[in-house]
Length: 216
Image 1 (tube, rainbow, N blue to C red):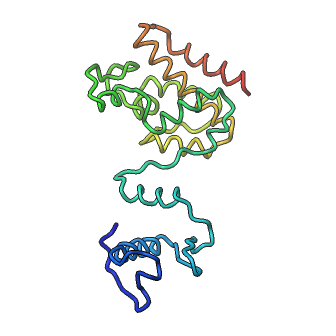
Image 2 (image 1 turned 45 degrees about the vertical axis):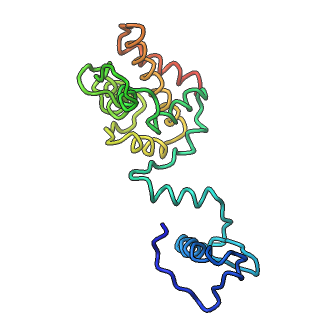
Image 3 (image 1 turned 180 degrees about the vertical axis):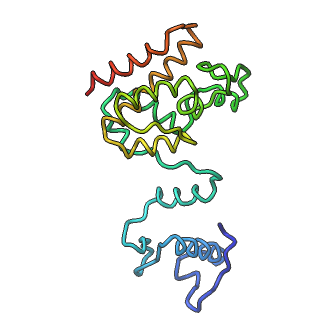
C-alpha cells in the first residue's frame, strides 16, 4: 500500500499540512493512495471528498482496503433477504450460511475439531454448506420437488454465494421459500445427528410447504 513512488511538488512542504517534517513522506503516500481511490483534497483545510461528489466514510476506505488484502473476498449478503417474509431466526441463519459460519463438519474441522466429516444426509461426500444445501442427492430431491410444485428452474449451483445471488433476483415469495427450505434442511440434518431421528424425506417437504403457506 505504501510502496508508491513519490513526487514532491514545489509547494509540498510540511508546514502546509501542519505536520512534523519527518511525517511529510508518509502523508504524501497516503495522499497518493486516496487519489487512486478517487478522493481529492479541496479547500484551505483538509476536506476529503469522492471525485464523484459523495461523502467519504471510514467504511468506504476500509472496504476498499480489505477487498485488496483479502484473497477471496465474499460478495455482500443480498439486502433483500433481510426483508423476507419469514421468522427472523431463519433470516439470521441464512446470513450465517452465506458467510459459511454455521457449524458444519467442515467449519468445525477448520477449528481443529476432531469428528466425522461425512454428510449426515447422504453419508457419502464430505459435509460442507455447498454440498449439504445445493449438491447433496438428498437435498436435491427436495429442491426438485419444490421446483416442480412452484415451477422454477432446477439449478445446481457451484458455490453457496452463487445460489444466494440467484435467489436474490427472484420474486419476494420465492426468496422466502429459499430461506425456509435451507432452515428446515439444516434442522433435519441436526435431528439426524443429535436426536438419531429417522424422519422420512417427505416429512421435511411437508414442513417447508406448511411454513411457507403460513406466511404467504
